[in-house]
Image (cartoon, protein in one colour):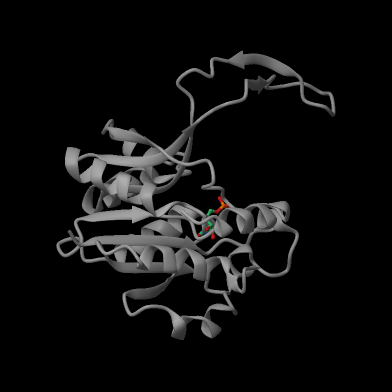
Length: 232
Ligand code: C5P
């Protein structure tokens, strides 16, 4: 199988309170981005990696020479979905009929979970995503209230609720069609699966290890280092 990977890495990481975008922060002597690229490049079935960076990215130039040969760099867009679509358009869907989209900010995903995702999707000829079951009780806040502190509107039934992680794997042509359709209809697309769902196509949930965190805040760096130090 020739599987392609699109890595959206064109975010500014506003929540990190750092001048350096989060994908360029260092863990164990390597940037978050280098960890993520290496991890995916090490998977044998992955024969192409499209790395999507911002047009304003002033860091990529110092790293791109060290990336494996299968990595191609393209320019992203305003929102994550625009960056992903730019990455997908850089692919030849005949050559790579399956694609995994994986956030640059998730360097701790286990290789065994990625292999499980690949096996499930190809085995069933259906798309799928890594996910973890929700463990806390989930509250929805009251939509309109004038107080400074939000007020609980209701408790959601958490049974059957999952956190959507990445990688998310789909047939390349199907994903392009789904995202273009969603954008045309002005739908909110925060991950690849949400675009596929709009076409009422199935998305399998593949339970992943909890270590697959998205580096978002400063404190996540120490946690990511802990996970990367595990010998699995
Ligand atoms: O901001 P958030 O954590 O949701 O971003 C998830 C991933 O999407 C990150 O790897 C980020 O770099 C990427 N992204 C992007 N283009 C954007 C916004 C985010 O590639 N316009």
